[in-house]
Image (tube, rainbow, N blue to C red; front, side, top):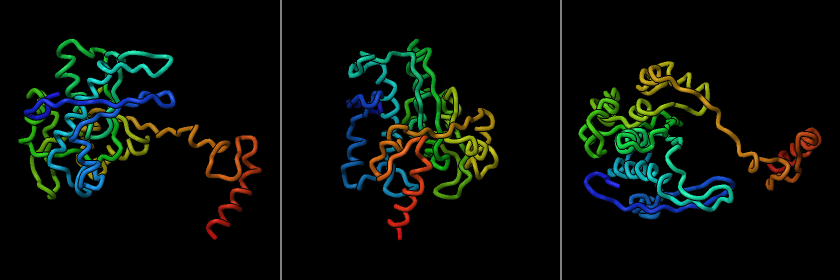
Length: 253
């Protein structure tokens, strides 16, 4: 993949677990941040501060994610074998993956690839938007027609007030749907400038849907929970409740 001015080789790791293909992107841009001197600080040296190469790192991630369904031979499932193909839905999570809809359109759909593919952009915390210097746009290797989707006037004094590029803004505008973690949070984000952290007007134009996070019914199954002494299900919950309450009170004094 092309990252900035260089061509980078990306490897993938894959496993099939509990009915899901899990694919991991392997490249030194990521590993040096996990295993190196950063102490597993993945996004920056401290909260609110980006590594200087974050735009390149997540550009690489987005491009690798777009290639994976086309090139990986995922054959661990007894129900499925081979590449996923082009009829896929990409779930882009937060600003780090906001380039996916942009690259999908500029690198693939413009060449007749992934014509039926869609992107849903999911916002978990709108305070983290991927705001960078406006002069950094060429690093992304996108056509100028996308510049307007990134163009953003930062109203905050820190770190620098003024014109920037905003990855999350582009992800919102270029994706097919925008979702977030709950209906309440969706309403909150469009209610005021401070709640939407200066993207409330963009979200009001595109609309946003709140979907409550799901629960892993195997991991959180009280009938098999290894952390409780008393197991229960829907038919025995009332019998188990006082016993578990007594155990909790004894544990916390």
